Image (cartoon, rainbow, N blue to C red):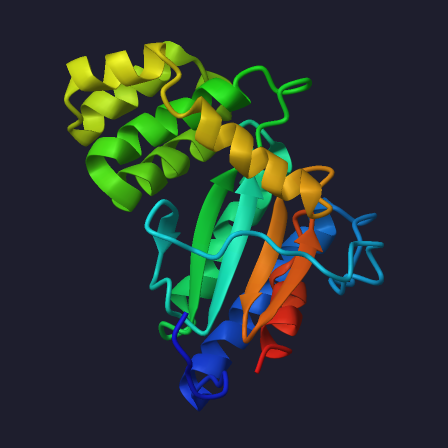
Length: 227
């Protein structure tokens, strides 16, 4: 990744983001009063050293892979906590002025979420044709309708987004991207991921893990520590 100046927000941007953070903290605390409130690795008993692959052209990304900080999220489409953190990460990136990007990788918890792995394959098959834009359109739709998760719904979305359905159906039925999904899952597990969402804050020569659907303030604390 290319080098950049120290991570800073302009004053107007900081004011906007502060409001977003406060709102996120209030909503998260009300919904999950027992959730942890400290994002640093030591407090969460997470590994001090992690080494996940750098963002690449194989990833699905919002923002630039050369951003000062990249949030590498290992996610499960059927996970309610991934659903909860999704708008948090989206807002952080949107209000960062291009200094934070977001990568989503697969970490389907197959033993408890039977649709997580099929959904991950569907997302990859859509991205094969429509790139990161298609991938995140799929994520938007699925997280808004987790009760609809099944193969017919994924095909409906692929058609709606403009995918070639012959290519999509061949891709999905063959589990074409299973090896990629399995590799990303292994990367998460080998670097301390025991559940989803599991996010690595990547930048400045550092990789800092954040486990769970943390509020925006916790992510921003870690982001701000990267120089």
